[in-house]
Length: 135
Image 1 (tube, one colour):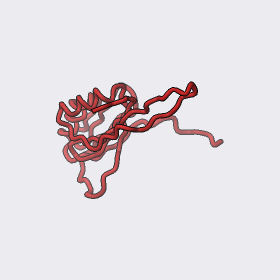
Image 2 (cartoon, helix red, strand yellow):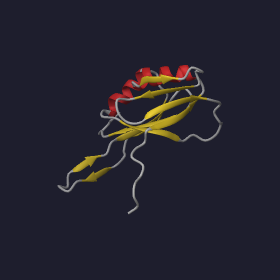
Image 3 (cartoon, rainbow, N blue to C red):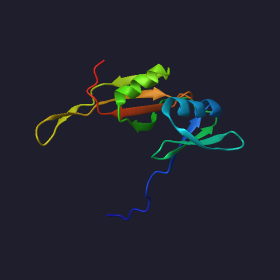
């Protein structure tokens, strides 16, 4: 086995159309905290209590296909979905059946749901968590 030199992911960089709007969105909608903002107002760092920081970098965004840029794990996925909807966050596809598996004791374990949602720059994010969600 090869020696591992990298320890962890320290940050993710997200291109955004409008830095101020994006800072406000990540703070008010997802609960991030602002850790740093560059003087030229083109880059800011936001973070959750754990995990990598997110660098929001204002620039022109290319037009094209959409792909997920970040996946979040939620402790209460149903509450998160409800909360984001109440905050008028654009929600994409909701996948309610991520499947079920049999545990060693032959009990069924629900793997949960996941859903796409979008920041104000149109970046696709996904949240997932265990739940036997029924709409």
